[in-house]
Image 1 (cartoon, rainbow, N blue to C red):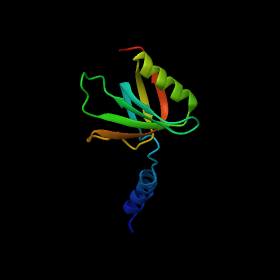
Image 2 (image 1 turned 60 degrees about the vertical axis):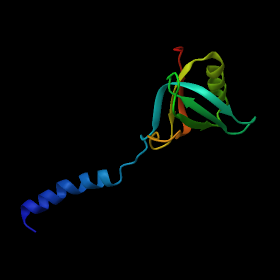
Image 3 (image 1 turned 90 degrees about the vertical axis):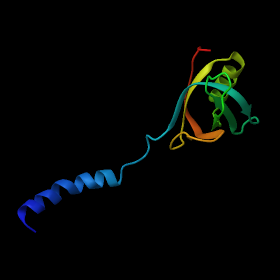
Image 4 (image 1 turned 180 degrees about the vertical axis):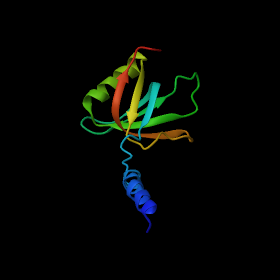
Length: 115
């Protein structure tokens, strides 16, 4: 190997290794201004929430799950109070097609007061 090639390999190797082992930890399903349209689950278990965009007649909804009691309470109160929410789930991305689009387990929830 000549000197230029050695320098190039020395520079590119760490760069290639950085991208080869990059973690997809920041990949999330993040949606805002959603309305809770369904809540299902029993005490002490996992709750399933279906959330729809703020359209008059939505054609799809996102399905999220959680076992966190505070999030369950906040989502149920948003449902009763007709509040919208911003939800982040641990799905790699939000589904782009279909009636039910998986959002994964809820990692972040923000309830706002917009109707």
